[in-house]
View 1 (cartoon, rainbow, N blue to C red):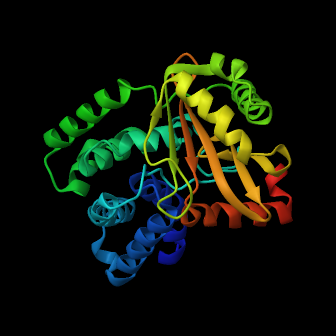
View 2: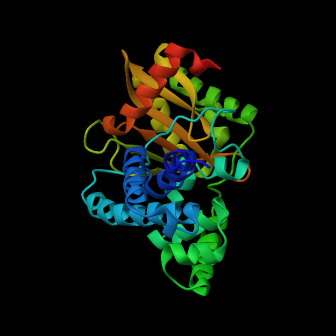
View 3: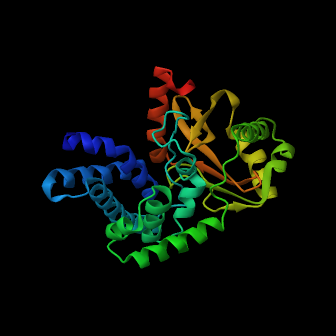
Length: 302
């Protein structure tokens, strides 16, 4: 028989995956999962008929509580808010299926932000983690019919956007090379060919680093900003390509410190329709620590 602690540790990666998608912050996700563990320790195991469902319910509801507090904080947030970048390792992430990998992209997490908290929870539980409707209903303490409506409404919204499009690795590499070329040369010709007309650029400094406090839109505007402004800040010798939220992305260093993490979103034709640049040092700290750890062990280059 598996011990209670062993059972929880086995469930931890799944709970973290759910909480991170709900909250867009790994620090908050870890707190929600730890709260779930404390609750798990306090209950009589003999009274829990479905331990996995119990843990999912506790974690989901803790995330809903966190979202209420996060909403109040984001009212005063300086500039666009972007989820905390998460380094993912191709082939070593516990969530290896394509559906779950697509649901980690920054573009998809940004789309979830536009759902209500319960729509977000219902959609993730059902469509990403495959929970049956009766279990989703129990978790959210509402009728099964109501849950079906939430998932249906959220699903229509998600399908009306292209945020889950994931180009092939070769396409991603080509896009990043064009992006880096534009930064290095100040030329936007190749880059403009890869940008959707409706492309948007967001930078998240959170009031703690230099960033644009509005969203730029349009291929001409974005390409000119990249060529004229970013090219002054970026240099090839201090930029590293890594996997961020399931897609190839770039991190820029100033000495040993990461100052910018860039990830892209794509439309269904493979064009870049979103550029996300995270400069808030609080959101980059965990990414920096992870990369330094992997670099020492060699894992970064596997």
